[in-house]
Image 1 (cartoon, rainbow, N blue to C red):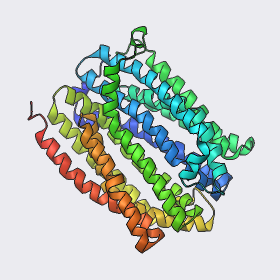
Image 2 (image 1 turned 30 degrees about the horizontal axis):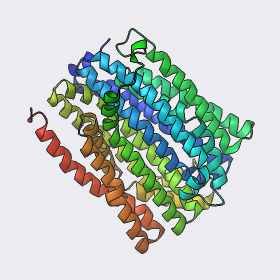
Image 3 (image 1 turned 60 degrees about the vertical axis):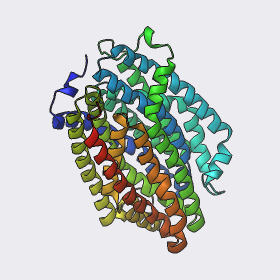
Image 4 (image 1 turned 180 degrees about the horizontal axis):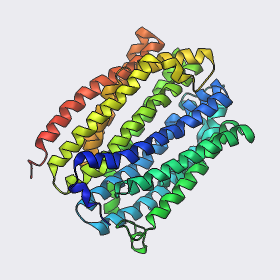
Length: 445
C-alpha cells in the first residue's frame, strides 16, 4: 500500500489526519518526560530534580545522534515514496537499523566510561552528581534501545502509518507511568527506578514498532534484501538529518552553558527550576512538533512529486496551528505559573524560582512556534544548509552572547531573559528566509 493521498487529498484534511496522531504521540512523549520529573520531584526531593536537570545535555547528545539517523531517514523515505522509488526506500529502512545500532552502542559506551567528568562539566555539584549518575547510567545502558525505538517509530510515521506510530508511543508512555511509581516507591529504587522504568517502557515500544515493520503487505517493511549497508544512502540521510543533529548538539552546549550560569548566579535550586520550567515548555514544544511531524510526510511527498503549491499550503496551515498552540503555553506561563510548577515540587523556594523562570522564558513563545515550523520545512524539502543555519543561529549566534551579557546587569534574571530575546531575533531571521524560499520554490526548474 502506498500513501498516494498525500499528493491528492485536501491539505487541511491531510494535516489533520497526519498531525493528530503525531500530536498525541508528541504529547505522550512530553508527558513521558514529565512523569519522570514529577515522581522524582515528589518522591525523591528538590536536589534530585536538580540532578535530573543536569542530565539534559547528555540526553540531548544521545538524542542528537538518534535524530541524525532517524529524522534524516524518515524525511528521505517520504521523498522516495513521493518519487515511487520503493526499492531504495526499503534499503533506507535497513540502513536506519544498522546505523542506529552502531551509533547507539558507541555513544552509550563512551558516556558510561566518562560519566562523572561529563556530569561535572554539565554543571553537577557534590549535592546533585549522585542523582544524575544513578539516572544516566541506566539510560545509557539502554541507549541502543532508545535509538532504535525513536528512529524506527519516525520511519513508520513517515511511511503513511501515523496511527501505528502513535500507538507505539502511547504504549511506552502508559507503561512508563505505571512502572515509575512501582520502581521509585514500592521497590524503593529512587531516581534509578525512574530510569529503569523508562528503558523497560521503550523496550516494549520498540517491540511494537518492529512488529509493524514486519508487515509485508505494506510497501515499506523488513526483508532479507535490505540488510546491506549502502554508503550513498547513509550519506543522503545523514545530510538531511544534519540540521536536527546540529540543533540538538547546539542545544546540549547551550544547556551546559545555562546550567553553569545558573549555578554561578543562583546555585543548585536555580538549575532545578530551569529543569521544571523546561519540562513545562517542552510539553508545548512537543505539541508543536506534532504539527511539524504531520507536515513532514505531506511536504516531503509533494516536494518529491513537484507539487509546490501543496508544499506552500501545508506550511502556512502548520505555521498557523503552531503559533496558536504556543500562545496557549504563553497564557499558562503568564496567568498561573505557580500552579504549573507545583506539579513537580512542594519546596516553597524552588516553586518561587521556577515560577519566575517559567514566566520569563515563555514570554516570546508564540514566535517560537513559527520558527520551529520554518526550520522543519527547510529540512524536509532538502534545504539542509538553511535549516542548519536557523537551528544554530537561535542557540549559538544569539543566545550564547545574551547568556554572557544579560546576567552582568540582571543577575539570575539575565539568564532567564536571554532566552526570549534570542527567540525574537531568530524568528525575524526565519521569517525573511522562508519568504525567499517559498517565492523561489519551483522557479529554478
